[in-house]
Length: 592
Image 1 (cartoon, rainbow, N blue to C red):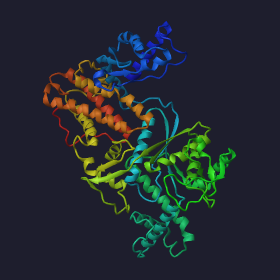
Image 2 (cartoon, helix red, strand yellow; image 1 turned 45 degrees about the vertical axis):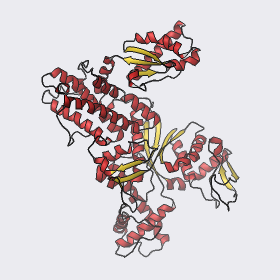
Image 3 (cartoon, one colour; image 1 turned 135 degrees about the vertical axis):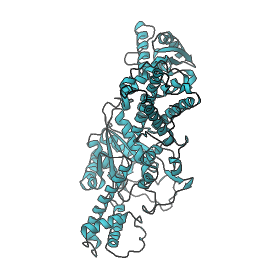
Image 4 (spheres, rainbow, N blue to C red; image 1 turned 90 degrees about the vertical axis):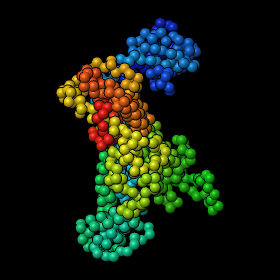
């Protein structure tokens, strides 16, 4: 149990005791939800709770009166050294140093699993991300959503959810026919024809040369000179399979692997759309009607046209939605509606989709059908990620010749490495635009969060390597260090770092529940900052260094802290999908 949850449980027990004694009148049933969290300002204590504020309404007493009742009970708790009532009734708590110091032992015992929890209660959750159409390699526009979805999946798995990672791709639209026609052109080129410039409307990227070459090697001259009606389908299937293999290989470069790949064409061709339409019709949710003109657009030639509409406005949508076009064919949204029905059919009552901000309005079309098909039991969350702008030394990066229009994921990884790509994508709230400067991502300064965090881990590893000159491997094991008395870790800087580490399980849980993995990056940057500050003090004063050759006991005590820092950073990097670095060029032994 984390420190936060332990204090929460202690407060709840005190409140229940006051209720049993008649000092506090509360309704039957569980207590109202209250928080135990970090105070807004460090000077206000270690923890703060709004319990008195929350209980005021149900207890019929002013918050400060309730806080006054709780204060002496809290002051007598073994873990608490001070209690202060602030404002209208907030309670600030100061914990004894030993509470924080003992948490280091819990970190070492748990290892990289520190922060794991069962808050998800093994609930099945489907996380769909990337889902790029198989018409080209992964590029910078895909990377942020890919990293975001994968890290959310890692977070949910760490907090007790049963996660299925899914990729949904469309191989049935007009774009895929364009892919096939371009691949056929490259196939002719592979057979020795001069094709000239790629015609307008086809894909210009050189990556399709590989597709044409592979098709030629498989089929020889089989399709040469044949009409499109004969070669379009087989070439399309070949090109899609080739591109999906390329996409998987690209994603593997940044350690992203999906459990399920769902094909839109299969959903279209196996009758699921007709089945879904009939289900909606049987529920009385389909009708023929007209829609008003789009808001905010002047359309002088607009005329109301009867359309087949779904009553999505009954389920929170801003308007009813057409499911068929004027010619009777399915609308763009219909396959997606059927796809989400398929997810529910597979047993997912909780779904998360990662989309670009350009699809923000699209969730209004999908969420209503999730409610309909699950009788309100299923829930869909959508996480939106904004654009990534690429720079090098502050200058916009030019287009890639290989992809035809954008820098590929492979090119990004080749320049800065997979860990840097993943980490940097999580250094901003996903709803905000992100500037990715290749030069800054690899620079070795504290302004680069990737370097700053990895440097902290490398410094910890360096200290432990130097400590091996004083201690045996058994003495430096996590099990042995977890038994060391840590009461000497009592300086303000040491306690600040320990508190930052102890907050890790609470932060992981809150990041998972909020679906905000960038909180992990921010937390690691804070831990790294506190650690580097302590390191720098050792540079200035030899007595404050982590390794003191003349005092083995003090050294081992400080090594407990070092091992805990290393463990938490490694735990966070694992969530982010990054490998922790053990050695870096700037790693100095001075403060060891």
